[in-house]
Length: 322
Image (tube, rainbow, N blue to C red; front, side, top):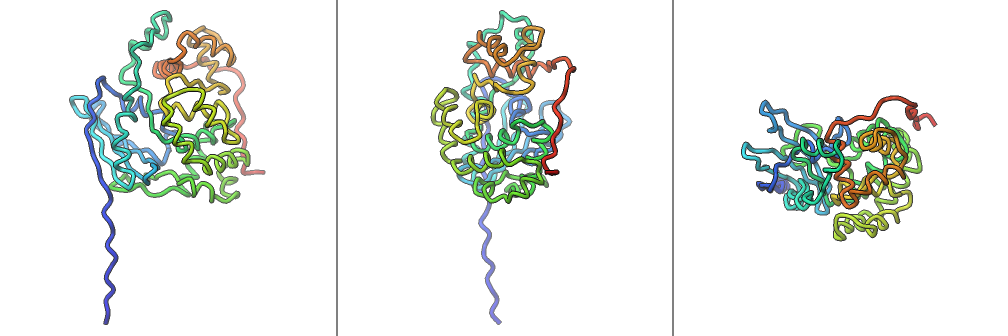
């Protein structure tokens, strides 16, 4: 009797580092914009009884393959990082930029605005993340086009759970890696429909997937600038709002403003002027901080400020019924 020799399973690549930022970094506040709702299947947190010591698990679809990253803050403020998967080394190399290295707030002056000055004084450890993964940031931004947050987050969860991959390494149960660009392109029309994604948005995701590598190369152009926006907007269906929502996360863009957002202009208006404004009014209010406008937006967000709640709300459209 001939016994077949089992094929050896290659070990999962594992890498680690300890990052010691020059200034304190809040993992929750810095990485918050990368989380797509509480049920995001690409993110999980470990609870901790010690304040500020919870660990964050995140997955990444890197140019070298899938990776799982876990981050935790030590008692002395250092950040321990460990990663698994084919993209582990790539992710570990990018930990400093992911946590705000190179994001220089030193010449931001908000002393002339009482609200911003006080909010900035209280703010601790907020930095702009730079993932270097443009396509991965663009897909959820596309899903958020012209729909409510509830609809967009539901679609993201459903599609990642259907077509994503299990996180490599000793990851928490249920943690997933977003689909590859190739797999996004293979999602059948009826699954987009079941996820509540209309044909316009699904076509835009497919268009982005077809040039995913080219999108990722725009990180070599720096953190911000018209050339980056122009290149991202060459994808059919991607406009300045989607480009801004993307570069804020992938490039760590310090000046990006999401013009065309349904609520953002009113938030800025109420926070900085005490009344609602339109997009032009928002840009006028932010003009004194050109070059830092996304940082100003993060200050407003970190302050916990909320605009007054009144007026009509967007009706949630159920595209699955059509």
